[in-house]
Length: 415
Ligand code: REY
Image (cartoon, rainbow, N blue to C red):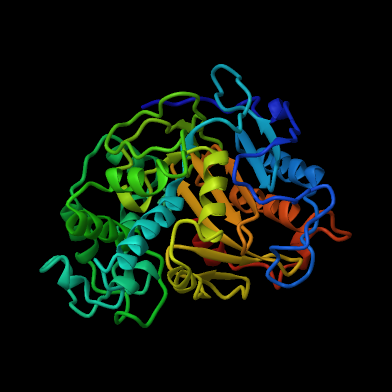
C-alpha cells in the first residue's frame, strides 16, 4: 500500500500563476477574455471576461478543503489563462502544472460517445436499436437501447457502488485487477434492474462499459484504436492516451491522492492503477489543454455531425437542482449568471475533473484537483467554472445557485 502524508500540504498553497499566451491553431478568432466576447453564452448576452482572481480563490479553497493541488486552464479564442495552487507531487513538492497529465475519469464517457456518434453517422449503429442487435445475449433485458446506455436510462445497476463501498480497501482490491467486460456486466446484473429501460435517469458506469464493448464489436478494433484514430490523432492531443490496463502515466504527470473514509487518515497515493474497473467509462489520461481542445472541437461541430450533436445536447435533469442536466455522454450545467456550459465531470481515485465549454465551443475550461472522496473539495473546485465563465460578480456565486444541492445531488454531480 502506497501511503503518503498530507501534512503541510495546505501550507504549500504556493504557486499561483497567470499565463496569457497565444492559443492553439484553429481557436476561435477575435475572442479576448479581458474584454468579454459577444458569442457563446447561449443566452444572446455577451460572455463576461474570466475572473482570474476568482479562479485562484476557488483553487485555494479547494486546497483548504484537503486537496494537495488544484489547477484551471481557460482556453478562450487565442488566449489561455492558467492558474495553479499547491503541489502535483507531495513527496517532491513539485508545483501543480497545467501541462501535466492526469486521470480524467468519466470525461472518458464523452470520448466514448463521440466514437459511438461517428459510428451512427456512418450507418454502423442505430441509436434506437436494442443493444441485443450488436451484442446478442450480453444484457439481461432486450428492451435496452443504445440511447438508453448513452443517457443513463438503461436500468443497469452501477457495480462501482459495491466495489467502492469502502473507499481505500475497495480501491486496493482493484488497483491491479484486469476485468473483462463480461465480469463487470455480471457484477451489475447480479442486482435487479434499477428501473424499466428508458424511464429513469440513473448514472451508471455499467452503461459505458457496454458502449465500449459495442464499439469494439462493431468496428473490430479496440476502443484505444478508435479513440486514437477518431479523436486523439485528428485533434493532435499529445497528452491524451488510453493505456488500459497499463498502470502508469507517462511523461509529466500529476500524482493522485485518494482520501480515506477515516477522518484524519493520511492520503493514499493512487496514481498507479489499471482503471480496469472503469475502462471505456473512465480510463482515459489527458491534460487540461487537450481536454479544452477536445470540448471546443466537439461543441464547435468538428467531431460529430451537427444533427447528431443536437441529439447529444437533448438534456433531462440529472438531479433536483434545476441547474444540472445529462444528454448523451454530456452534461449541462446552468451557471449562476445564466450561462449554460456543456462537458463532463470525472472522479477516479485521486483526481476530480471538470471540463466544460460554451455552446459554440469558444471558451473551454478544465479544472482538476489531485484528490477524491472529498465532496467539499470537489464542490469548491466547481466554483472555478463560475469565475471562468461568469467573470467577476458582485455576489458570491454559491449564494446565487437555485438552491443548495442535496447530498445525493452532490454525490451524483461529483461523477
Ligand atoms: C467511483 C468511486 C467513482 C471513486 C466513479 N467514477 O464512478 C466514474 C466517474 C468513472 O463518473 C471513489 N469514491 C473516489 C469512493 C467512495 O470510493 N466510497 O472518490 O475516488 O467519473
